[in-house]
Amino acid sequence: MVALAVILSDLLFGMMLGCVFAVVAHGLNLIWGVVKVVNIAHGEFIMLGAYGAYFLNVFGGFNPLLSAVVDGALGIFVGYAFYFSFLHRELRGKERITLRSEMVTLVSTFGLSLFMSNLAVVAFTGDFVGINWSPGTVALGFLELPLGALYVTILAVLIISTSVVFLDRTYIGNAIKAYSQDITATQLVGANPTKVASLATALGFSITMAGGALLTVWIPTGINPYMGALYAPISFVIVVLGGPGKMLGSLLGGLTLGVVIDVLQAFVPVSLAYAVAFLLLIPVLLFRPEGIVK
Amino acid sequence: MRIAGLGVTFFGLLALMLLLLILPFAFPFSTSVILINLLFYTALAYSINFITGMTGYVSFGHVVFLGIGAYALGASADVYGLDPVLGVLLGAALGLVFALAIGLVTLRFRGVYFAISTVVIALAALNIVLELPQLGGSQGIILNLGFQPYSWYYTIWGIVLFEMLITYYINRGKLGLGIRAIKSDEDAARSVGVNVSALKLYLFGLSGLFAGAGGAVFAWTTSGVFPYETFSLTFSLQMLAMIIIGGVGTSLGPILGAVVVYLPSYYFLTVAIGTQLIIIGFAVVVIALFIPEGIVGTLKRRSASLRELLE
Figure 1 (spheres, rainbow over the protein chains, first blue to last red):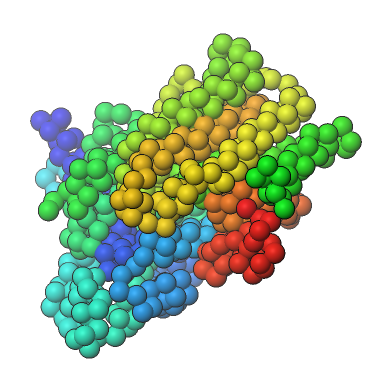
Figure 2: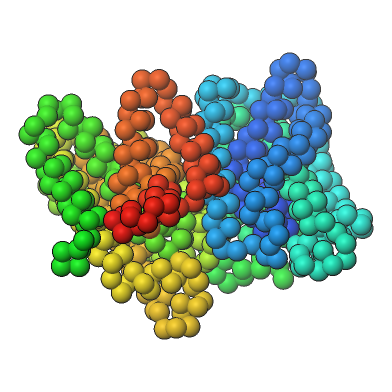
């Protein structure tokens, strides 16, 4: 009975962790799937979102959930700025992204990640900080669930499912989906490809930075300039697990990763659990490059 | 002007290496320590140049081979009391073996998929080493090899010389034609009979070998191996920055990039560690977006007379 309870709570915590991982990776997934670009500096924008939540808490008394909304709004502007400074020159007038452009975006966003994380050390100092916010717990049978993590889980699922509905049911969402499939055809039916691609990038950044704010609930003392170096690879793995461009794939990949890490931790040291989780990427790329579910 | 088919770049690099051969005797110790570091970064730059520079496969996790080389020297010197020079050879051998094993799987992935698979492998390697008590776990290995600046210097000098010769040989020969074909269009190269997979693996193996040797020298000069330091992705990023700034794939680019990246950062060391990386990051963004050929490529494009001279 006790053992069962431990396994159940491990599983539940793994799933909750997976949901927050999923929302952190979701912005990357959207950009990767639509614009076909991998932003190596993805982790640095998560870091920016986390610091956003931290400073809103320190100076405005905001809790991370409120900060996620503010971060999400800021992310729209950051995303547009990113699109027009890093992607526009490579994507403009092209029917599909070339391998050369792919390399340019990889290398330039890698430079950006180096630039941002080290600028953050100067601006925010290298110290670990955190947000002190705990709305209490709720009892669920024999399980004590922290309410903060529960709210985050709900919000994460809400954000991801809203984005799915948005892409499926609205005109502009359909335009984004069309762009991800065939750029020329999108133009033929009268959608401006630059508008569509920049909007998708902006939405991706909005979700990424909101995800950074939500993540702070899970890492009470873990906000620091180099946190991107952990959460960017986690996001890469999640997107590959779920399949780039599949919006529900983020949730699937996140849940898989969260459960794998949490369950493995019961048997091996934490760092080995993470090593296994990272290496999951290789067999998936080899055998199921379209994601673990077709 | 060519002598026996070898151009000015070849003789220029040879002259530079000969100058570096006698330089430690002409200058005081402090200078040769700067030169050791400069040669160390040059070795790393040439090493990543083999794969990322020549084929366009961006190896973000290249530090994994440096770490393996460092641990090879660290463990062999610590446990078996192996001579450090043999440790460097061991580091090179293990770098080669791991590169072939990793390359066999990851080189099947194209573009971004290759890049991110190298990142996760480097991170996984760090996390595994942290849990290996034989390798000192999170404490690492502290070595007591003493201060041997001349041995350090000539070992790393020899590594760089080998790298330059091989790079030059590849770039000039028929091999280079095949490799450039892979870089511009892998499928087309395959269809005209270039053995794409073998060439890529060969280059990745070379780059792993030299990164392993460089990593072993790093452990030797710092008299210790510490997991977070040796597997720091910052190394990968610096290597990449050097070849991007110098000129990817060229014979001259890596050493130019190493000089341009390392020397200023040595003098700015007193300002703040982070500041140099901010500047390097910014430089990489600007160069990647606006002058993707780097210094050497841009000079070649701009001037017809230099096009003949620089390789």
